[in-house]
Length: 407
Image (cartoon, rainbow, N blue to C red; front, side, top):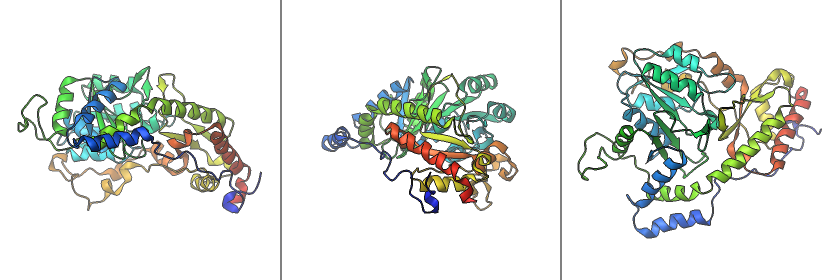
């Protein structure tokens, strides 16, 4: 093979991968229709999308909100989580999973992930449950469902709520049932990178009518679905999804199945192709996962098979070959938001009995994954042709062949 691109050679790939977002004239028309409707506030698109997406995810009820972060916060409040309660969260996730817990006055309790899945470890969850635990948040990392059998059993055994953070898992399914409606509540994001996207937006799913009514009230200024406009049985905020975003999401929803099938096909093909490359692996298969959403394609890297080349240097080399990739998260409990003594609110609540000391948290799997193992490819790399998958594999093999040149 030719010289590595990072050393001055020609890259494997020079053309871009499929651009994201993907939009059509139907999407443009959906936005113009809202514009011309003159109902830019509390029109019929939001309600129509709530019904459509809840049905798509196989939940009885849905509430469309302003962001995935907001969805998590409202779900926690609807579940009765509040001051001084503990909520178990994975240490490998986006900051919103834990910051939403803190913003309702509760304590994020970080636990480790499974080395073979990168999802929250049910054994670690069980060990972390205390009398103050009110909920578990199961994040479906990369679009791969967490172990919902074990987590549901734990939640039921200890009479606590299970909330699914499905921000990356639109269309993902566990044992034939789409995620988001398996736990007590589910939350989704429609932020720009997500597989269903309107730039911003979020969603709450549930099949519990009481939780649904509380979530609806909390997102709509504390109003009651059956009450008068100026009747407010709860203290809530204005977290409603806008009509333009709802109109766009209704249109984008029509293509979700087609794009999900394409990601699944290409994700499977890439997984099969890298099986023959020593030192590159993906998360382990699980027959209970009947659809992986592939918001990310996650590779597990071993430097030993690349002549000791560090994961970070490998990422630089792969990017140089025209394959965009990144290292992903850092251990969430190490973020300054949770460690610095100057970031007081809301972690200085007197209900905590003292500020949580996250400096004492140690999740060895997460730390290894973040420091030396995980490599992310974003979902749009799986939306193209078979040749795109070939280029990814060729670039990895090229780096392995010439890894000694990078020492």
